[in-house]
Length: 156
Length: 156
Image (cartoon, rainbow over all chains, first blue to last red; front, top):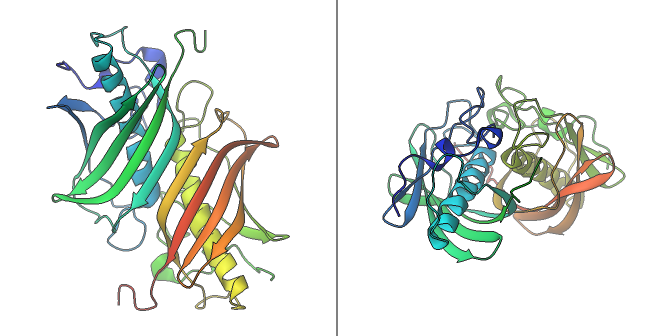
């Protein structure tokens, strides 16, 4: 499957306000998730104020990145497994059901973080992914995200 | 044990820059955690832009609140179990090792969130807590936080 744009740029407008990844949220992080060789990828450089203790990134931000990368990855993998062509107006939207995060080592502040996602399981309305945060080639945080498909009539 | 101030107001200056709960972080959330009747409590009202989808709070923020409430609660419970008097310059500082979050139901935006923590286990350098987010008396998110004690010489 080829993804012409980051998944967040394909979501319906009403689902594009998320603080972590919504293109229409002026204050948010604007995470953008693409697919390369079967792996989902986002990149993010934390601000200086996203600090935990001196020199290291705040764990809550790292959890947020895994959360949003997980729901974006879920939409991509779900579409791929169901042979759905992803395009504007035809994009499944997932929300997080469970989030399990292991902080393996402190994540240094001031560097670009690469967030990579792999598919674990696709079910009828759920997708489970393994999400890693990588700095300079080293995995500092490992996450597992169980994402739930929003029904088509959600909020209508 | 009586806690004279929120735990975050007792942390050493060098450990008070956390985006989630540091009193010296100008951009951050300034979470404040107290102890009432054996339960730790923080309160937080998300901003309008902390949105996931219309009407509901962004899951990444909820994870952040559980993370910071978990490390603050760990310091309080650890001191209580070790009969340490918590005061400025004499406060253990924990960081998150593992974070497990169950989003039980969507958390409505525009309301005050109450975050409550209970002790599960205290070990020599680890504390495990159960953290719930409650809105209008209903638990919307359940978390388990394993927090790790920073060594006294950390960063020195």
